[in-house]
Image 1 (cartoon, rainbow, N blue to C red):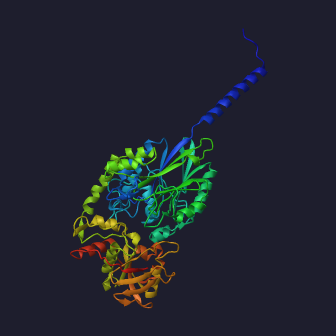
Image 2 (cartoon, rainbow, N blue to C red):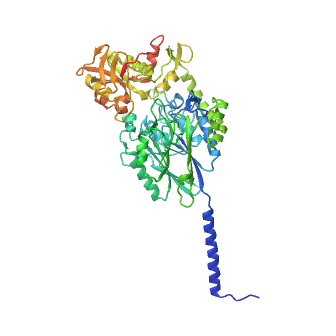
Image 3 (cartoon, helix red, strand yellow):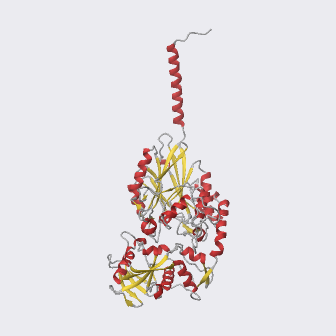
Length: 594
């Protein structure tokens, strides 16, 4: 028998069903698990696809002397990334810029397409631009990002689309603080990735000093604004879209401790941390949860006011890992659950016992990651194909050397003296410019020139190309003695610990009084033993990067009677070939006092 049911009873029953459904739904929402996200950072890779002789100095877990560990190579980077991703349900790989530029032949010979293709294969998710992305100008950077095969250039060392048509980066470049002539950012300021229903924003920026670090003509028409201002504006835009978890990747950095004693790259207290990134971080909104930094090629993992600021050295020798947890209700990062670490990119040259020693000292799960990571064979195969094309060119002998030419020193270095001498020799004849002095920027010397074995050793094209990869031309100009002194005085920048030492050619010497006030540090300038006279003219050779005011040496933009010369690399090759043997000059040309 069916019992009569009143309308009010039906309404009450409906309300009960709705209430039960709402309670169940709320219970499900409250029971939703937090979402783990692993952020994997790489910075300043500079096209180091092959491990070559890359090493990393690490603290000995057992308290012994610092350990010099073989690391690096794209295959090892890919293997470590794969191991890190295997242990995380959600991950993003983020680059801090300078993926390309100032790179070995295996990248530069292919106009860096090889590096981008390898990063595509590894699975890079996003990159900010670095200053070296602008080495060949903004138009070429756009091609690198978007793909395409430009027409071949006669006599050019580098070629495009050598193995296959180049289709561009499969990851976005970001540039929140770089604007074109129309007031638009060169690339998007940020990108949003959805992680298990939670939106995560990534903002990218580059040091605002980038125009002084690349050939100025390459960034003509671009405007680089304050990093923190641009990042804060991008963060506000993300928040307006409902994004509450924000990561920042910036091509700017800092340092731990003095040059002679750097701090441990995993010491979260960051003793004696200094540099632009820390000043920028103070001004960046707290809506930014994690800061990946770059540019200074240093390793550090700082936790400042509860926020991670991290960098993993350079050249693919280390990766930075930040594990964050996202709250499914608030859609924010839970700060108390953030973990971070820098990991060495161990490769096949790393002794297994040393690998275990380093892994055992790490907290889990990072120790197991280091144990299990092995170079990715697919990436190794890709690199090998590019290396096979490069090998014949790289192996070509260019001369004999009587020892190694390191680029380190108190001021000028054996490598710097060699390059400056080669540039003077190439421009000294009256028909070639009548140069009396050559000056080389230290940042343009990208590696030592090693004598491998008992001297004399054969120097190869690959070695000297890696040492000088930019392809700058030589420029001879006239400066007065007073201008030359002003140029050298500008080597010491306000707030910098060390001067940017222009490397002088043979015959030019001076004393640098370190404790003297600004404007009075350069003393006793002499050319071939004769005092440099303030109102006399001198013919000076520099590369085209410096000639346009690169590295903030703006005095050189005022040089007169300019004469263009050949390529810097050709000058070095001719110099090495021009003598039976070239040996390192041991005597500095800059005398530092005290």
